[in-house]
Amino acid sequence: MGRAMIVTRFAPSPTGHLHLGNLRAALFSWALARKAGGRFILRLDDTDPERSRPEFADSIRRDLEWLGLTWDEELRQSGRAERHREAAEALKAAGRLYPCFESEAELAARRRARRARGLPPVYDRAALRLSAEARAARAGWTAPHWRFLLPDGQSGWTDAILGAQAIDLAHVSDPVLIRSDGVVLYTLASVVDDADLGITDVIRGADHVTNTAVQIALFRALGAEPPRFAHHGLVTLPGGEALSKRAAALSLGALRAAGVEPLALLSLMARLGSPAPVEPFLSHEEIVRDFDLGRFGAAPVVLEPDAPARLSARLLRALPHGAVAARLAALGIPAEVAPALWAAVRGNIARLEEAADWWAICRDGPGPVDHGADAAFVTQALALLPDPPWHGGSWAEWTAAVGAATGRRGAALYRPLRRALTGRDSGPEMAALMPLMRVRPAPPA
Ligand code: GLU
Image 1 (cartoon, rainbow, N blue to C red):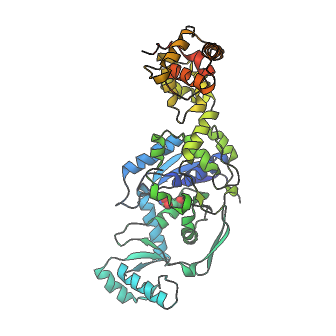
Image 2: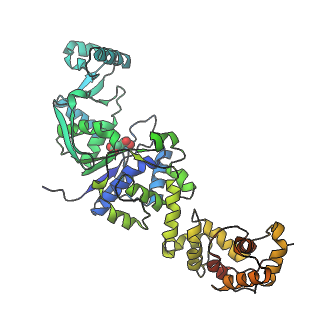
Image 3: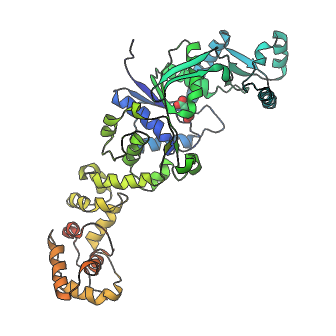
């Protein structure tokens, strides 16, 4: 029977800030649900009491809100401890969860011994062979951790990105599901939550493939149908450097502070690692419409560190005024000039806020400008400039008149005149900017 509704989740651990590498799982999970008219859940994997922090959870929510990746429901794994314990008890009753007493040092020594004998360094299930008396004796002086008894044979699934997968569980250690201090670990908590919430599609990084083999066995042991899985390649920097090495600079918060547009980040991640070229999408709807999980490959994806900023500038150039009207208004740009101002400046800014700088120049003039050796030329030119208001032909008329009067041409003509009006050597088309300018610059002192 087909499933009625697609339900996905993004499940970050609130042990740090989100960075660009986390964005793939978030975006893919969100887009798959939105495209299918399904549900998208934010799950905070905060079972690790030492490393989880509320301020990281806040930061994750803030980043997702900024990106516009809205979620329909939120839950914290720590709030579901009761369900996790119930599932653990059911597994114990079924003989699938067994107590172990080995110390880390003991386990490490055994792994070394197995390797020396040419055996895979998997847990040898020694605890399973303890007699009831031996077990009781050990339990008297040390609290056990608990391992899941994996079934024999292969654990397989059809991965929506990697294709057919089969992992031989003989090469996987029975995973620890409960620590000796009683903390239920992610491997179990995630399965219980995915099953209880009816998650239909789990999308996450390729570093979770072995987890998936184990978790499929866990779903079955708990009498639940496993969801579909998709594992995307991890994002690396050129040369294979892990993104986490530069996680601070490439954190979503840092990119936001640098003025990178959220739609640019989403557009980048919506295409990177697929045969379709990266291009700026102008809305979340367009991203959802275009989204296709099947076109992503399994290989790691290389991210040029300046790609977000570059795509952001491309996006701004393509955004119509309507898409930014509210933000321009919030910057204090009056509604009557905003459409024309935006059309004039959007191709020449790296961040949207720069539109406000150009508006200040239009409204107040450039302020004092040092013309250096061009001072006399500029004085002569300004005498030929009519008073504002100026129109779309004013720049051509003025520069032609100044050229005729002075004999200057090309950059020697245009650059000082641009500087006289804007205080800058480069920027938007002057023909488009001049009609918005309200102030006649004062002649050089
Ligand atoms: N908290 C896990 C992680 O961040 C979740 C993985 C998953 O999606 O199941 O890697």
